[in-house]
Length: 269
Image 1 (cartoon, rainbow, N blue to C red):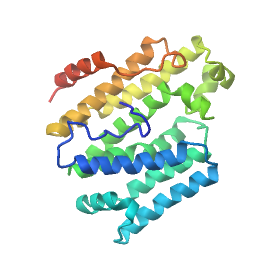
Image 2: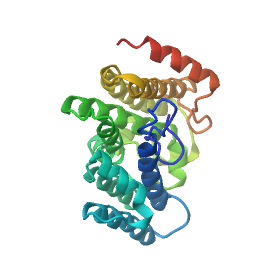
Image 3: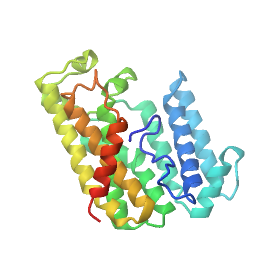
């Protein structure tokens, strides 16, 4: 559930059918490589943007029918499954935005960012499994954006060290929380109220998207069930810490996975 590096990708787990597993791995490698170019190491912003432009040129070449050496696996997957390469460009645009934008004035701005940074992952997966319908896309977008928000809320302290604040600025002002408080990692009533609001928003989006798991058959449906239950479990863990994500970043342990399997099995068909 959010995983290291590119958090929203359901990395080819045993639940992904064997036929699609190489395709999921290729898409994950693309997303992770681009995300690392935008976020890892000590490159200057201009160098990061130039590296992301290299990824864009690779996608452009695939669209022209070429097979760039560094993108051969991706090219094969795009052609086999007739994937919409605009979704790959959307991911790259979001990663580029991360290089230059560190604050979001309101939830609308954050949602627009998530529509490019998270939602394309779910839409690509739907295309892989021939389940790309308007209704499924809407449900998938809700799940993926929720996962993105959950990752932001569990990583407030980590993102602060990178100079980023994903909590909407208008929510921060309304709650009475300050960036100095975030820097100090100070938890008080105002912080708890702010986080309770953001956690509930993410939970409602996850619940809204949950019917997708019941619409998709077989292993892919089970994968989505676990994604949904894992996201909800992380939100519970944030609440259980008293919203102190500064000292207690929520992660899922072995006992959590047993609970998730049980909850996933109980989701109505």
